[in-house]
Length: 158
Image: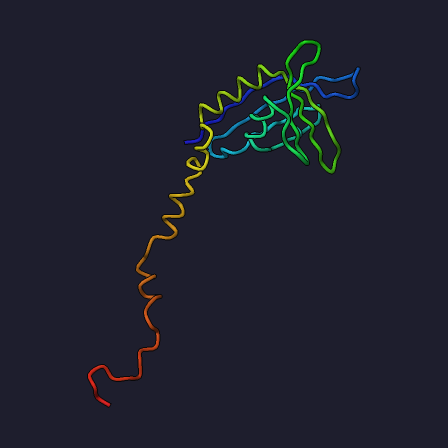
């Protein structure tokens, strides 16, 4: 069964230290994709801008700076408010987004209740799938037989 945990919230796109613009966003977590979080940014275009990255990265980023490359996340305070900053880089450009810590943390807590840390692989059924793939079949018995019986006679005839 697939469970979806979503949260609509308003982020801020940081344009400069003095200027930011609001960006409506949707955080989505699906138990059938248990390692990932999905964020859709609604920027006024026909289609939202979608980003997917590791849930673990966002969980850790609530407490300490983490990530490298395309996605970096870290906690900070702005005007006395606790926020999470996300730096996103792509060939199309870079963005620095500010998210309210309380809202993101509450949503993450719901995802962690749906799929506790360390149990993500169980959701994918990888062990069951591997067991099924590796289970012996009738065809295996045929495959393992010698296709060219020995030229030597079994009963001593020559």
